[in-house]
Image 1 (spheres, rainbow, N blue to C red):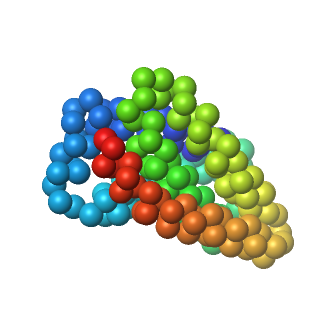
Image 2 (image 1 turned 135 degrees about the vertical axis):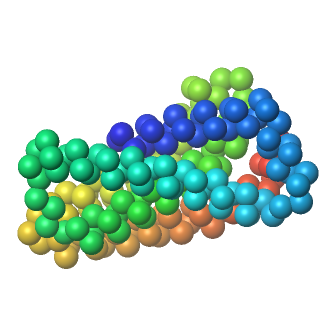
Length: 165
């Protein structure tokens, strides 16, 4: 949940600043591929969220004396869930950037879309804390499918969103 809310706040702030300063217009006029711009935004958000997740995992490990038995599974789930959140978030952030009530609408649009990602990531993380970490890989595969779908659709949908900016 912390990562999800952090992603929403980061998206709101970054797209609001870009819309106010005319950066979206400059990106549109630069001749760069909209898919490249989208993937750059996804990459930046993914890096920010992965750093936050590293701090959170370290804090959980220290404060709760947690033994992570499925570390490769935990890394895979964190990466795939973060890619899914960033992929969908970049599209909806661009969509809500021009709206007056974007602070309210972005979470309302984004959170229902990311509910399956949150559920799969939670279940996979639960399994990674248990002895039978192998049973968590189907959750990682599901997160991979969500990430692939969100990234593919986002790279196609970002062009009209950028043109309307």
